[in-house]
Image 1 (cartoon, rainbow, N blue to C red):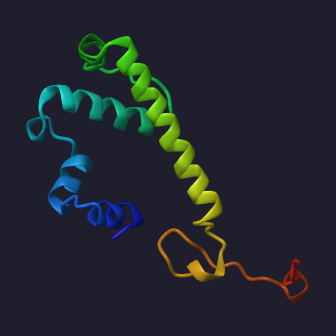
Image 2 (tube, rainbow, N blue to C red):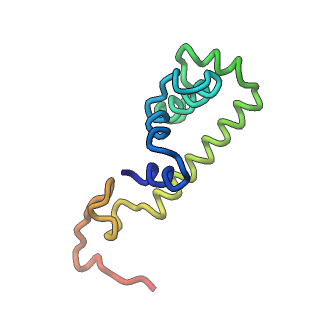
Length: 117
């Protein structure tokens, strides 16, 4: 279980709901909800670039410009929070994370092991 799944479960999201969000099948959501979730998923997969597939015109027609701007603002805030947490709390080179998913051991030379005051 990764950290995002564990956090979701702590917030009351069921394993079934998490699976639905991962696979994002149209039949599991109301169409309007699926449109925004699909848009967000594709935006993330495209590293912040605008999706250009068939559903995007429906997304743009269904959500107002103001709503779409709010979605983008939320995406940018979430991306920043994720980068911040990855940088300051989940450093892959931290010794206390060795063996954890996504972390790696770093061999330090004795000259590298200095204390900072």
